[in-house]
Amino acid sequence: MEISAKQVKELRDITAAGMMDCKKALTECGGDMQQAAEWLRKKGIASAARREGREAHQGLVESYIHPGGQVGVLLEVNCETDFVARTDDFRELVHNLAMHIAAAAPESVAREDIDPARIAKEREIFAAQVREQGKPENIIDKIVTGKLDKFYGEVALLEQKYVRDPDMTITDYLKSVIGKLGENIVIRRFARYQIAR
Image 1 (cartoon, rainbow, N blue to C red):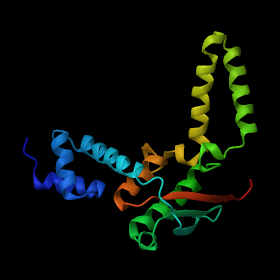
Image 2: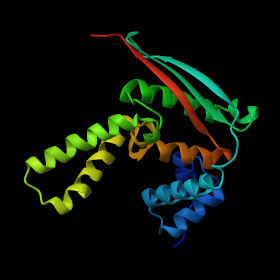
Image 3: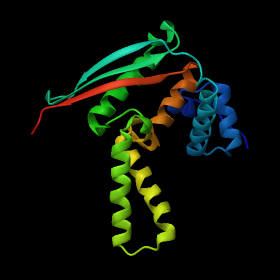
């Protein structure tokens, strides 16, 4: 199949990937724009995985006040170099993450940050609910694990659906930027404030 320059440019505008990568993605996916965008995202995620172990001691602290002044976020995101921390792409990532935190109200960065006592309590509640529904004992653990995964998806930032693109999680979004910028990026910590109602 012949891939046109117009198709390559359109995919580049959508994904910000390189021209050759866009052409290869379109060729691999038979010219399907959506599949090619997913293919590039997967490629970005693969390249991001190679960077995970690298130290990230530079970065930005972002403050975001939601219009109306009722919700505010303070967020620290780290990268490897000051050069990347000053790029528009990195600044956009940090700003988008702060807006996401304001909107989605996560309680922690990762599931590992949640108090184990709370997880044990949630597990106990889920198990009681499943037993109440009369499910067989041998599948209760599997159902409870699924419910816990859903719980993590609601309270752990990295596992939440990205509010600006619910087809990806925050981890997917982060890895796509890591793939684009070529550096390890770490969401270090955040605080979210909201006027009590």
